Image 1: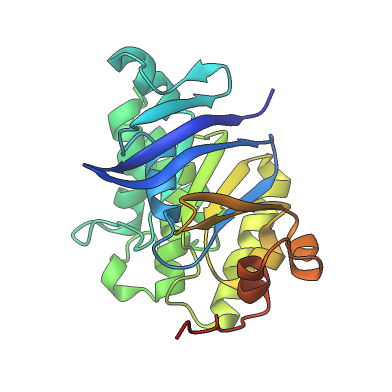
Image 2: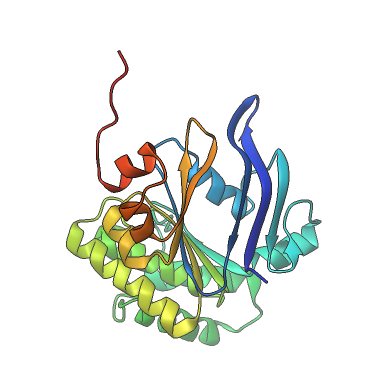
Length: 251
C-alpha cells in the first residue's frame, strides 16, 4: 500500500481553482518531489496533504487512513504520522533551538522534561547542530535554521516528512549539504520525504520520482524520474523546465 494516495483532488480559493482532478501515489521510503514553475500550485498541494488547506473535491489517504472528512480525533491521529518543514523554517524567534525542537513533544507527549530534552538534543545532533542548543534562530545562518526546522519536524519520529522549498535562499554549497542530509536521514531512518522545490540541483540529488504541476493545465503534466523527464520530456513545458529554456513569447 502506498504511504500517500491522492484521488481526483481539486483545491482552490473561492471560485478560483488551483488544481483539478489530481491523482498520484507516494511509495514508502521514496524521495518524492513536487516541482513546477511559480504559481502552479505546489505549496497549495502540500498544504492540502498536511491538512491545512480544505479540498473542494477528491480524497487523500495517509496509509490506510483517509484524511479528507476525518473527524477531529482521527484527524489528529493522522497528522501525528508526519512532520513538516515550512519554507521559512517557522522557528519561534524568542525560543532557543532546544526549546523550538521540544515544542511538539510538549504538546503531543506525556514525557518528563528530562526525556524531552534528551530527544530534542538527539534530533539536533542528527542534523549536525550538536552544541547549538542554546542559540536563538536569529543567531544562525539560513542553512542552520533549515536544519533546526528539520530536527523539529522529526522529533515525534514521523513516517513522512514534508519539506517546502528546503533550498530556498541558500547558496549552492549549503543547499548541497542540506540535500545530503535529507538523503542520509532517508537512508538511516527509512522516512518517506515529500519535497516541494523548483531547484534543479536538489531535484536530481534527492528525487527518486517527481510529478510536475502546471498552472495552465491546473494539474500534473509529467511523472517520472528526473533523468527520464530531462532526457525524454513529454512536452515543451517539461523540456523548458529541465533545460532551463525560456518559453517563446506569443505575439
